Image 1: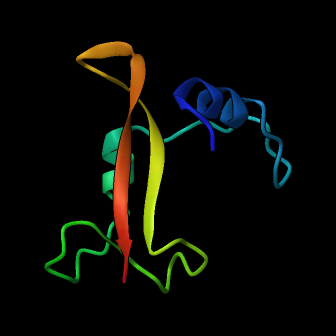
Image 2: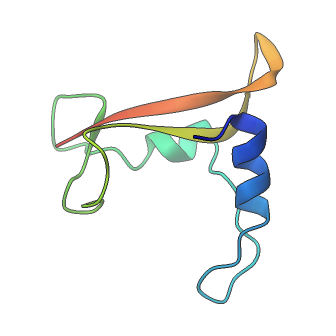
Length: 79
């Protein structure tokens, strides 16, 4: 499990699928991939993200406004 600084570093140092410009999504981008077809505001579409834990948390690149040394997590429930 990575802390926020570790997640930022891991994403920026990643090379995958011929690309090396990876980054963590911001908190708004993470919110945009939830399953809008359900009334559950935290639902992550299981068909689109089949290998996701039932209660998944993802680091965002957005810093916490209460403490800029920390980042915001986005939590999902797998549907």
